[in-house]
Length: 415
Image (cartoon, rainbow, N blue to C red; front, side, top):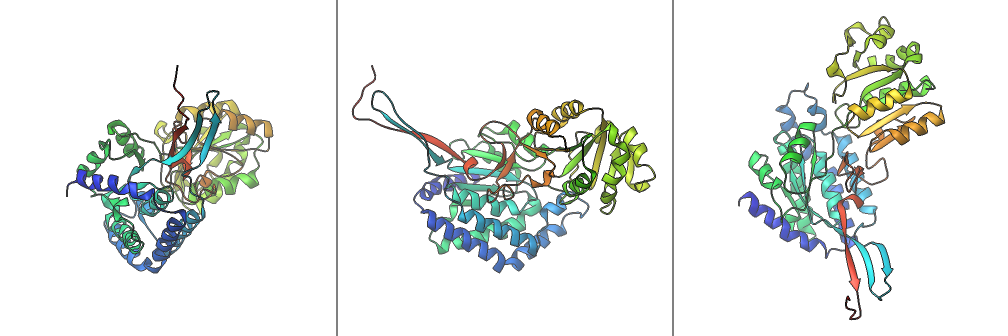
């Protein structure tokens, strides 16, 4: 069957999800989560095949790699989603007009959500759980880098759906070729929304070529500003965690902005990074402050390309600024609107930073590594939106619903 035919199957199957009870959906999600653990070896074997085709030095390698621990985390997130109330059928607004019309605004699923993603096999499970809980069908368009792992994941999901007598077409894994991508981007009438997850290049391609509505997610150029009133004891582990917890994810730290008055504290802030062999691209002032205090083979002079870059690697830039205002202007100029942080004991400075920085997530004395749906209590996430229309920040259940108006009358006519 051609790609459009497969999308028609998904579109048709999506209607059946409206009839599923919340209890049955929860049971399905828990069953899939249990199967992830029970069939961990099968998933990891498929993942090893994908990994064998990728250079370990590739920044995508860490995103592609699954482990028993990561599978346990995926299963735990799915159990958490199963416990969450359905976002569908909520009365968001209700009023009775002077003419007697009863008007309600009620949350409903989008219908069919397409996800285009790169070497991130965890996305297959996360998207399935959130879409099923919100009564949406999903079309998964993963990259060829993760095809074996994605097929193993969807195979497990389909077996559980069959057991519960649910149409397996509510979850469709598309071929990894470009033809499937083109068909998905232009499937108006069959697909209601597309969410790209991956590099800035992938997101830009989807945004520029899709005729189906798109929500931009993913690309994160994240900063931490260490203020004149910053606490080194807080700042050093915070910077280390934001940079090194997982370098390949979109909430990883890319650039430290340092108030000029705190140059003497820069070695203490950066020394923990050396244990992870983080390469630092420092401007002139910060380079001079670090020279002799940070491994010479890991310290380099910054170039213009060092700033405004999402490294996705053990690399980080440092820029010296003269004021809070300069830090805010710089972030708003070069960042991607994802996650930004200030380290300070000055409440007024923190409030100004949080108010004026234009980003989906703004932190005060906490690392950008917390930008995650599960960490926000949302169960899991389908992506982190860096745009402002419809959804912003970690997108979970409520963000993948829309609404409709229901109007009840008694024969009124409009004059």
